[in-house]
Length: 253
Ligand code: PEP
Image (cartoon, rainbow, N blue to C red; front, side, top):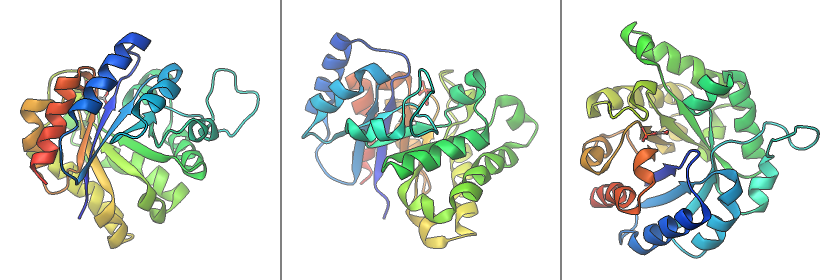
């Protein structure tokens, strides 16, 4: 009942020339069939040009971050309404790099989630534990704290218009992918926590896996019952690598 979403987080990579080539390659190679969507998330300066290049194709565009404020004296920030204005559909919220490097708290992540939805942008809420937290056996407690902050601020109904990405921090950019079983355990836990409040919402929400996903391991991860796509970093920067994951998703539908 849930479609796959294969999303690329380009992080702080790209240039006008490189992006044009990458988007052209992705648009030209989108696998045939339905039941999955493709999304690319470029850095802010390139959003509008990628929106224009992807217009009319099967590729949607999202941002990597957004302000929790609507407008005003917030130098360097970008408002959710600005993302909507230029045609963004999604925004990544609470990526572990934002939490770790820029000190984003779960409360701030929740505020960004609310602000994005208020502007009509679908938030992709990132949750994930560090290696030390996994080894200490606190994975579920960490996920619960991150998820509950948003549930308390926005309510479970808000997840009818949101995506969740489970991204174990130890798997991001390290080449150490969670096994399909490790990922499925956490995805099942996340869906169960939502189901305790609303079974229909829980059954409908897309939960993506992120952390060194690539063509070779995508089918195993995407074949798990609670994994509904991927949030892809490194492998989203080359059209063939990204499309290999999209093809794995298309092959499972
Ligand atoms: C990410 O940054 O969200 C990510 C999953 O990166 P990578 O695929 O490179 O691990």
